[in-house]
Length: 73
Image 1 (cartoon, helix red, strand yellow):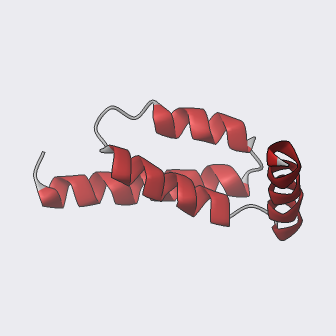
Image 2 (image 1 turned 180 degrees about the vertical axis):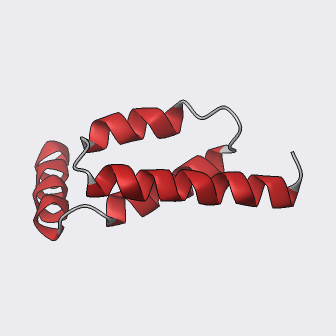
């Protein structure tokens, strides 16, 4: 797939992720969907995941970070 086609596909996936997040879909389900995208590179999937992560509620970011910190202590 050419760079332009990949960019278009990634933009489409970005829009889909934003819509799913706005509709309140579970973050884990969105993570699974991103992982299952066959036509994206690992870096593109990571970027898409990070985009989805930033769309979460601020309080959820803090709760998850606290839980991760406790897990490694």
